[in-house]
Image (tube, rainbow, N blue to C red; front, side, top):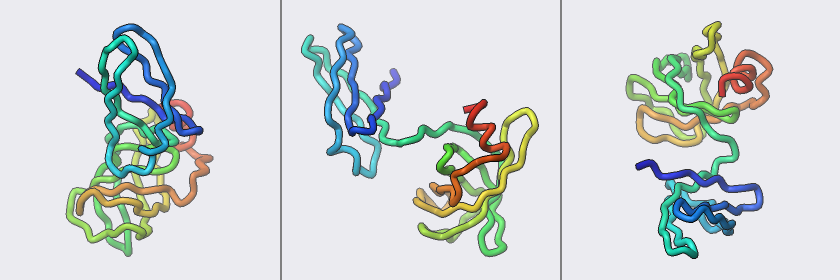
Length: 156
């Protein structure tokens, strides 16, 4: 059984819908916004049904992908895979161990899975390290006027 996802609005509320009776209600979820880990909530409907949801706090949703690429930092090249992507950034997994730290800048090069197999090069900043192989990165420039911008419009 998959747990449904509930999205947080700009005014820090979320709408919960009961799977049993179909009623929905909106609650303030501002106290969960700053949590580092994934937020899973249980709620009880007025009909008595108890449900669980995952609270999605991202402003822009990421798409899971498997795009071959490489991370380049200080003339060192780390081959790997882009595992998810959004207009704000990517998650990159390298094939070999790295010493990249949070706050470092690098360049990433990867090939899109669109029909023309476009190559994308972007400057990124490391925002989070999940291991010595996996990094959460943000694009230094989020204006995408090339094939990456088209990818977000048509394949997202």
